[in-house]
Amino acid sequence: MPATRTPAQLTAVAARPLVSVVVPCFDEAAVIGETHRRLRAVLRGLPECEYEVVYVDDGSRDGTWDRLTALAAADARVRLVRLTRNFGHQPAVLAGLREAAGDAVVTIDADLQDPPGLIADMVERWRAGWPVVSARRTGREGESRFKTGTAHVFYRLLAAVADHPVSLDTGDFRLLDREVVRTLTLLPESELYLRGSVCWAGFPETSLEYGRGPRLAGRTKYTLRKMAGLSRRGLLACSSAPARVPAAVGLAWLGATAVTSAVRRRPLPLAAWTFGCEAVLLGVLGEYLLLVHREVRGRPPYVVRQRWAAGVPVPAELT
Ligand code: UDP
Ligand code: MG
Image (tube, rainbow, N blue to C red; front, side, top):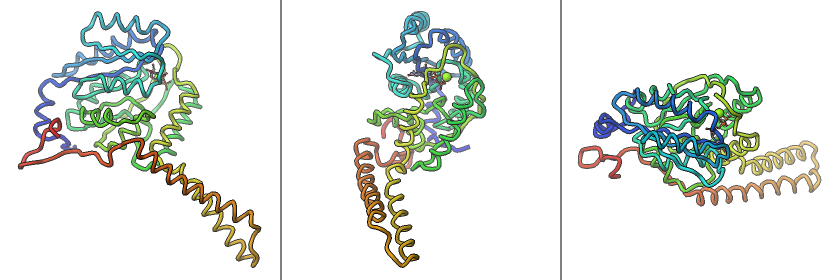
């Protein structure tokens, strides 16, 4: 078990920490009441913790907002954020992370596919010192074979080409320590792939396994287009490989052209060499695009985990 916290932080966590739960909602009127009931039951049972629930209405059109305001009116621990229109799941989660005040922040879907009961285990791991507790999907009941199959392949492809380690089969059901939330919410980027950003930030992570159940009610809000958009953003955010494809193809092509010419003792036609050269030149442009992409994204070159000064650890909030 890693002692990732300083003694001062451990004392602070021991004194009734605040746990925030962030729930992005897009047209979830059919489930939101039951979701809140189950969340509240779990959160009330957390030993020695205060809690709040932050619902983010991502431009719902089905009465979700009215249900949420009714919940907020009846429960002072409920906070609401309403976005002007549907911006998508990732921006909605980020809005919640920015709004949440907790020492630990859990993000969870509204449709009860992620079991609220797991939050208690997440909080326990967090109190043991883990800054990131993710939930790894071992089974996905009630989802199409197409969705589970493509997700399986995508996570493995991403892990193979990513510039930094990425977690397999984890979505956005996870607990983040305040330090991690601070790091993520300071990033200026708006093309979001939060599960990649969490891995990039590099804080120690542990994971709990769970079987993902079917939706309680309603239909998935992740259309094929939204899923494709998320995968594209994930690939471009976590990996330099796509920009390097032209250079790799060009060099391999030129190499093959040279070998073939040598074997035949006669150079191949000019067009064969031209294609290779063009691909290499595109690769050079790709390298510059990568540089520009990194600069405009504005991520810091490193993230500090802990500081010590004058013989003692410096509290995170002073660094
Ligand atoms: N969601 C959102 N904005 C969107 C799409 C989805 O806030 O544009 C929310 C949705 O209400 C749910 C979570 O994101 O709480 C996951 O969406 P969904 O369950 O439809 O996706 P799936 O589980 O089918 O991948
Ligand atoms: Mg769902």
